[in-house]
Image (tube, rainbow, N blue to C red):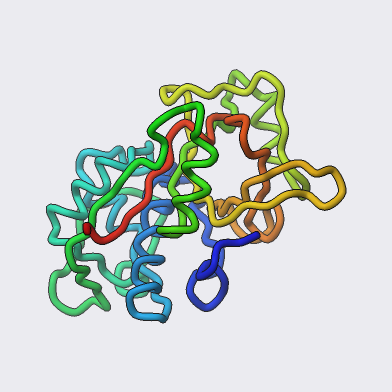
Length: 232
């Protein structure tokens, strides 16, 4: 199953963060692009580079955290420039946000919530939030220079459902931000999975997406799950 509203044209094609550690900016912009789509019923490519350059609490190409990026977005009066006007460069530079023109979007007031309020019900909570609010920003552990067993699995992933024994799960260990766009059950194995949007280009994985086992906090994917919506 893929949650209604996460298919073309409402969600743009897979993007590629390159050699800049800007996954947090890409995952955040995916949520903002989804908000644009559900509010206006059309798609728009918005600027990840703006978040890399301007979200001063984050680390540019050295990573970031959802709440820091949202704080910048809120303090910037919920404004994001269009991607073509503030294009991605895969390096951090000076903030070049333009409040007038620049293909920008000014959103009404938005808020964020963490769908995971209880670790025992995390998968069910994320699944319900997908249905109610749309795509979910999550962190996962994808290995490291000192944990090449796991990084090799992610780097070389082509298809199937990721299942990794002894994969790290605590919030401090999560080192890659991605977006859950749907869920399902494998028709052959009966294994439940999340369908996840990555930012490593379309030649990686299943056209830029991957599946990972659902319901067991595989690689920390159910540790936190942020969504953006209009406050009630």
